[in-house]
Amino acid sequence: MVLDDDERQEQSLIEQCVLQNQKHLKELSSWGIGGPCSYFLHVSRPSQLIAAIRYCRARSIPFLIIGKGSNCLFDDRGFDGLVMLNRLDQFEAIEPGVYRVGSGYPFNRLGVRCSVEGFSGLEFAGGIPGTVGGAVFMNAGADGQETGHVIDSVEMVTMDGEVRVLRRSDLAFGYRRSTFQQMEDLAAIVAVTFRLVPAETARERQRALLERRRKTQPIGERSAGSVFRNPSGIGVSAGELIEMAGLKGLEMGGAKVSKVHANFFINFNGSTSTDMLGLMNHVKERVDQMFGLELKEEIRYIPYRTQTV
Ligand SMILES: NC(=O)C1=CN([C@@H]2O[C@H](COP(=O)(O)OP(=O)(O)OC[C@H]3O[C@@H](n4cnc5c(N)ncnc54)[C@H](OP(=O)(O)O)[C@@H]3O)[C@@H](O)[C@H]2O)C=CC1
Ligand SMILES: C=C(O[C@H]1[C@H](O)[C@@H](CO)O[C@H](OP(=O)(O)OP(=O)(O)OC[C@H]2O[C@@H](n3ccc(=O)[nH]c3=O)[C@H](O)[C@@H]2O)[C@@H]1NC(C)=O)C(=O)O
Image (cartoon, rainbow, N blue to C red; front, side, top):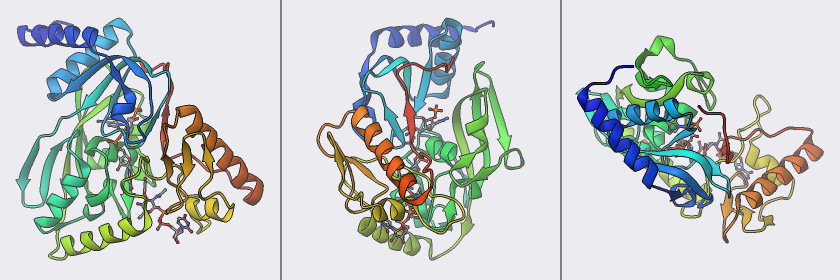
């Protein structure tokens, strides 16, 4: 790989940042859980991200890209590698209803912005505390809408640090599933272009959804949204199953099952990842014993060591 002067400069900056910075992952996670990472980088330009990926690859350093950390459970020991905090937050209106947005742009801000401008498709994003990249990767959805439905194209970086553009026809989405979760050479989603349709009622609909969310979810408490996916094809949600198993309010160390919504687990008093994993396993076992159903995690557990190189 031959680098030009700008790339060489970027690499040397990355080298300094990577070697000097440590961070406690609890500061980066909506659950407030997680030990230190060996290296930390705040990424605000695509060129930084690409240089950091190449740097890690060349030295076999494991790395992770995180957005708002609203869907991750970090380990108490931390992460033995580089954590990149994605703050690629450019926003560009290409034409009315078509937006090209950096993957670190706040998903809730995007949802509100589009709805206020009178475009429909992302009303549900209004209350979601993630980034655009996290939402695309997880195919976030609520109230009958899904991120994947309104994507026009995605710009990504491969593990070799190459930029690739994927068109709508290259992508497949399902319930909390996206092409990206199976892609072995994905390093990071960098930018996304959304195509929405005009609707004067978009903001009104969004307000109603936000109101419903405030009533049914423990907003303001330390959670990671839904812990488990809803089981498919049985017409009963994970929250209902956990409530029917009598587990609402159950505590394990500093972690508990929310009394407001049973599929939200709360760090109410210095929960460790061990407390939270223990609570999740206990809930899974009880639901399995009572209903013969195996709940599947929606949140992603990030172990101390990975093979992500
Ligand atoms: N419906 C709701 O009410 C809620 C929904 N959510 C959803 O959870 C998701 C969390 O978003 P966010 O907090 O930003 O994500 P996180 O920082 O929690 O990251 C979650 C995972 O997404 C992957 N990821 C994140 N950003 C990128 C990127 N730029 N490129 C490639 N992969 C990426 C990473 O996978 P890997 O580890 O493999 O690198 C990471 O482990 C969103 O989809 C959000 O909408 C969250 C809370 C509530
Ligand atoms: C919060 C998330 O997404 C949420 C999204 O906000 C909402 C709103 O559309 O719909 C899903 O929740 P959900 O299926 O639990 O939706 P809700 O409408 O709250 O509940 C479904 C049903 O379960 C019942 N319910 C819910 C919680 C509970 O403790 N007890 C209970 O009986 C509700 O009364 C309702 O009849 C998403 N979760 C999943 C796993 O699909 C997330 O992904 O992190």
